[in-house]
Length: 239
Ligand code: UTP
Image (tube, rainbow, N blue to C red):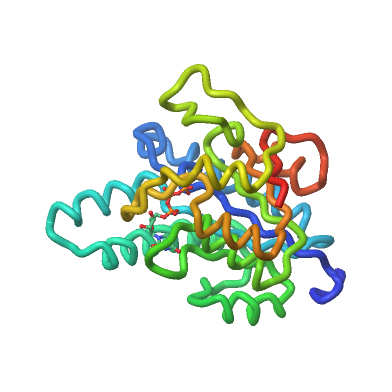
């Protein structure tokens, strides 16, 4: 295996939507098991040449718990910590699925991400700091680890000129300049549980460190293609 210092590093954000539990998953746990196994297979197949750092989102479970806890009176910072805790549950499950290929611990800070990388294993992280999203955390991790690329695997085909879940006429960008994207996203919400696609913190980090970024449709095949520089469904952000 190539030494970790010689390997190029790719940071991958896996949308929390991938890990969202549905009734089908509860009725037949094989469906849920397969999601983890399919993503793990992609990551394991590529890890001998590339150092992979994967960040798992919190998904609908995080949003649901945040909604309940807000109603119960919890402050926004504590709600963020709740979201981070859920994203770390997803990280734990992915670590379990990757077995010996993954570093067994979840980093609690950017410094720990760097330290864990010396293991030459796949690092899996959840969120790190309140007040942001796992997208911002992923951009910061890409910056800190000097990753050659940041791949954000999400539940839509890429970046549109408006929210495709709300607008049927939304247009998908194949490439988009960062400045344009910043203008598009300035209208974003910053309440706990509501950070979308790429938030302002993520974009500012991508901008200042000129991180190559792809926002792609999350499915194992598409992820594998994007990591290997093949054609993929998604949008390239030009920093
Ligand atoms: P996510 O950012 O993962 O939300 O964290 P998500 O909706 O699942 O995003 P996608 O779908 O993966 O893109 C859930 C919540 O946890 C808190 C925030 O409140 C966030 O909305 N969080 C997460 C933080 O405060 N800091 C972090 O580093 C990560």
